[in-house]
Structure formats: structure tokens, C-alpha cells
Image 1 (spheres, one colour):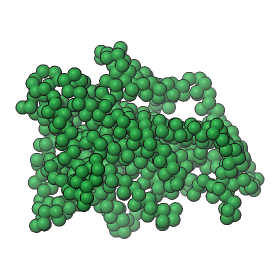
Image 2 (cartoon, rainbow over the protein chains, first blue to last red):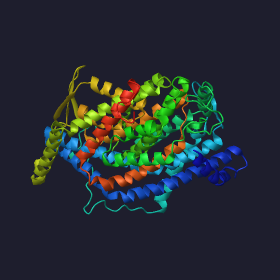
Image 3 (cartoon, helix red, strand yellow):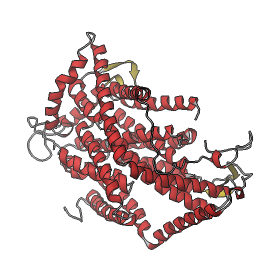
Image 4 (cartoon, chains in turn yellow, red):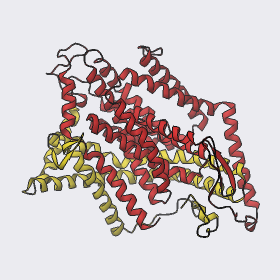
Length: 203
Length: 389
């Protein structure tokens, strides 16, 4: 904690400057928090890009196995082969488990700046209370700094992603040498049902 | 998915995340911890707080400062597990918070002198576990939604089942569970999970897996040789329930008959969510095999919906902990751990090709046995029967 307090004291002067731009304190607070959120989004995006690039082959092979087995399970349904359906579905779920947790680990790489940002905010704003418009039982009349930061982060993230898509024409290259197999839905394998005929779970 | 569902999902997810921190009143957090510290006797002996000491964990004077390097290295191990075996990463994260960072022993020192502080630190450990996994479940769910693999009504239905466990357990247990009991129950659950993993490494478990693999391969080969027109679309579409009952529900899914006992998904969903919110472990790895073995749902329905269920369960649990008991978070430790998981997830794919799956599972069975033995005996007997004693 001492190490971090030292680090925080170095970056504090830089970060607090944004909070002091506006004369009205609350405006300055939201402006500063937006900038802090933007820094978190950018840093997170950089590490996410690095993670995806380095692990592309591994993730793609897990994804391919999952899609292949899932599609086979649907074809087994079409052929009314219960044993094949259960076997392929089991393999697909096994592959999904590995793919899901790999994606989880990579997703984390985009979120690491958030706790550090909240840690800095705690040193500055832990005693600042934001009054609620009305009293809420068990909550009280006010909330803390995390109430403002997290929604701000989400909004900045959405804006950043949309802006990035507009500015950079991001064309994804094929994940393997061949055309990647697409995950099928039930409606891709089975013909569309007549209205009222299908109770249906699926897309 | 049409634009209505996209907007609905985006607003719903944003609302959930907004609601969670909106109730984190800093006044409540400070009061809870300060009250617990005030009840602790002052001094430099074990179980006492020296008010002049440097603040450590949670800002408590004299508390251990979990070495960030230790946290980082442990999180690399967690990230490696996530990217190789998959599951079990949450348990390892919990082990880190409990044992590796010395927080358990510190909390235990207050068992007799300040039970309130003992329980406060226990709750903080549990919530710290969930914050890490909850953040990642949020991003995964959003990605699955964008890929169109999330069936929103089904996901919400499953999530509602898990809310019961996620809300009740924190309400009933927050502030009431000593670290000793928490460690004991943690160890028991690890034993059970280790048991499942062990079964998969036995000849019988391996035979089932080989059978499934062989059947899948045989079907794949047969399909390659089949003519395209040979597959005729079935007249039986979607789900048709053929039998309703308290003891059994049967249905046909595109012409194939399945059945399950309805009480199992209700109890199973509740217990998985309850375990997740009690122990601070995600529960996601329990949901997937549960949904496929009980309901035989196709993978694409299970995948995104289980991620959403984990997410909602996490958000509700953390919301409830923060709301009711005002638990504080040691942010720098979480940040360093996230960085460690990132590094571990880079290393994992590079090592996985050299280590067969079965040996990875055997490694985790040994780990589960060790962690289960240590925590169960330490929790319920007061001493560990495996080193360090």
C-alpha cells in the first residue's frame, strides 16, 4: 500500500489538474472523472489488443473446435441420432469451457486500470458523498465515488469503441487458412417453422 | 437479434452496473470498519491494533500489507489456470486471498479479541474474490451478446433462479461467518470439486469421455460421406412437452426425447448461486455441466446464458454485500492481480501444447486434495493436518 501511495502521489498532480479545470466543482469532478475513465479505456484497449494478437492462434483453435462440435450436434439432431447429439454436445461444451475461461482471462486484460483508478480516487474522494434525490432504506441519503466512476467508464468505453470503428476501418483477417466455420443456429439447420407451430427455444 | 433486444440488453446491463455502485455509500463503509476497529483493544500484542502503526490492508493500522509482488505472481498462476484447464481459477484466486497473502491469519488473530473485525475481514475477502470474476463475466456476457449467442429470455429465467441464492446468502451470512468456518466450508467445496475432477481421470470417467469423442468422430466421418440431400428436415420442431409432472418432465427437442426431474434445476440453480455468493467463487464452471447434464441443452444456449447468469449473480451478491454491510475493497491488490491474470493468460497457451489434458486434471486433483484437506481441517478442527501446520 505504501508503494502505491508513493505512485499515487506522483500521478496525483497530473490527474487532479483535470478536476480543477472547471470553476464549478461538480462540473470539474465529472470532467476529471471522464478523463480518468478515458485513460483507463485506452490503456485497457492497448493491453487487450496485445493479448488478442499474442493468443490469436490458441483462441482460434479453441473457437474452431467449439463451433465444429456444436454444428455437428445440430446435424445429429437433424438425423435424430440422440447418442451422436449428446456426444457432440458434450464435446462442444468441453471446448466451450476452455474457450470461455480463455476469453475471461483475456477480458481481464482490458479491465486492469479500473482498480488502480478507483484506488487513486479513494485517496482523494473517499470522504466525498453525493446526495441522492431521496432517502433510500438501507442505503441512506448519499453515495460514494464508485457510483460516478463506473457508469462514466461504461459510457466512455461505448463512445470510444464507436469512435474507433468510425475512424479506423477495422477489417478482421480470417482466423485460419480456410474460411472459418460459422456457428449455426437451429434455424440454419432446420427450415423455418410455420407461424404457431414451433414452441421453440433458440434464436 | 433485433434492435429492441439490443437496446433492452444494453440498458439492462448498464442499469445493473449502475445500481450496484449507487448503493456504495462511503459513509456506511467507513462507519462499519471504524466501529469494528473501535471495538478492538489497542496494543501491540496479537489480536490488538496499534493506532500509531502504518496502515495496511483496508487501511487498518498495523495490518499486513499484502505484498503486491506475491499477489502478482499468484495471479499469474490463476491466469495460467484460466487459459489452460479453464475452471478452478476462481478457487485459486480464493486461496490466494485467504492463505497466500496472509490475510486469513491476520483475521484469525482477532477471533477472540474482536469478532466483528474478524468477520469484517472475512467478508472483504469474499467480495474481493467476486469483484475480479464479476468484472470479467460482464465483458464476456457482452461479447456473447454481440455474437448473438445469448438467448435473453432464457438467460433472464436462469438468472432469476440464481438471484434467490445470491440475495439470501449474503443477507443471512454477511457479518456472521467467522474466517474459521469460511475456510472449513471452502475446503469442503474444494473436496467435492476435486472429487468430480478425480472421477474424470479414472478409467470409467476416461471411458465415458473417449466414448463421447469416438461417437462424435464417427458421426463427423459419416456425415462427410453422406449425400447432402439425405438429411430430411424433421416435422418435429423446437420443444414439445410430452409429459408434465412434479417428478418428471419429458419433452422432445426436434424429434428427440429428453426428460429431467424439475426439482433438480430449481435446487441446483439455487445451490450453485448460493455457493458462489457464500464462498466468493464465480459458480460459472458449475453451471455449464449442470445445464448440459440436466437439460441436455445445446451448447450455444448454455454458453452465453451461463455467462449472463454468473454475471447477474455476481452483481447482485456484491450489491447486497456492499449495501447491507458496507464492505471495503483493497483496490491496489485487485489491480495487481488483474495484471497477473493477464500475464498468466499469455503464458498458458504456450505451455498447454506440452501438457496433456489428463495430466493437467491430475495436477488439479492433487491441488484440490491438498487445499481441501488443509482448509477443512483448519476450519473445523482448528489445525491443519498437512504442512504448513
